[in-house]
Image (tube, rainbow, N blue to C red):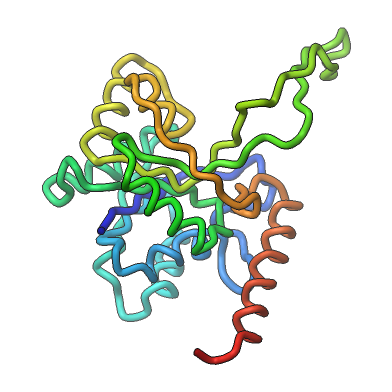
Length: 246
């Protein structure tokens, strides 16, 4: 099979507090964004990688140079939008005339640097056999609480939410090019911004397959997440160095 990769990376990361977009934060000798892109750069089945960047992005050039020192025509960029869904749609538009309606498109978060190869293979295999597509996800394991604010504005417990059947959505998420474009167009036309691609397909009446992935494929949202990601990645690198030659 082959597929196309879309990565929304236009966020400013202002809540992260690092003084620069979190996708460009240093992590285990690279940036978060480089780690997020690496599995797809290395995969010959990925025909092209489209990265949606902020209009004033000044950091991408150096990342692109490190990813492909001699240049890589498989990696290109577009200007992102105010919301994730706008960035994804802009990247999909760049594939017009290249991707067929039935081609698979994977969308992966720029702030998820710890995607494992096993998870990617599982997603591609199971997703390709499903009529709608699939996304990596993790079943909810913790007790979940619904909150409301007390008089001081502090969050307090309102109720306990039954966690049976609840999953945490991860990325990549994979859908047919034509169906994903149509679902996002319908959502945006109705002034709705889906928080992920699966939600746009839900609104179009289509249910994607949930493929269980590793909890280590988490999204970087805080400095503590960054430290944990460094442990995960450095552990993988150490394991590879200790593995016997094939």
